[in-house]
Image (cartoon, rainbow, N blue to C red; front, side, top):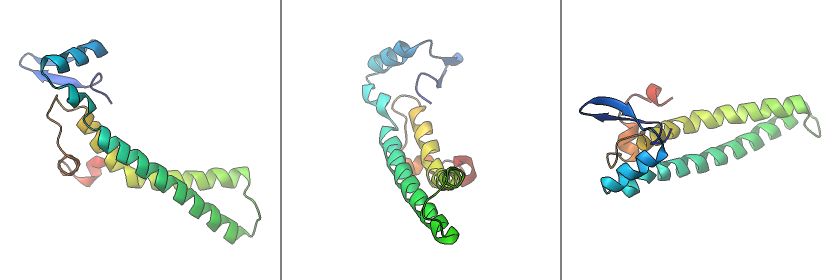
Length: 128
């Protein structure tokens, strides 16, 4: 989700931005240009952790499969199962960060909270 997709609460009620330039010009008007990047740090952390967990999860499950099956190489079906297991582990680990990042990116200009405060806003189930 981006600022462009987010709704902004005003005195008249909720409205959506008509286009991306509306978001930009509002940031300029409110002198909140840097708020266009809120949540970017969290998104980068989430991306790094996601790739790290997937790579090591895939390597672990592939090695485990090869040890248990006694095969020298991995076939297409087994490869898909190993990749799916690694992806499932990745989602479990990184989904709360992705949720926090989305909340931070769609918050009002300059109103983004830190990562801990954003994660503490709701229950852990809501983060998934």
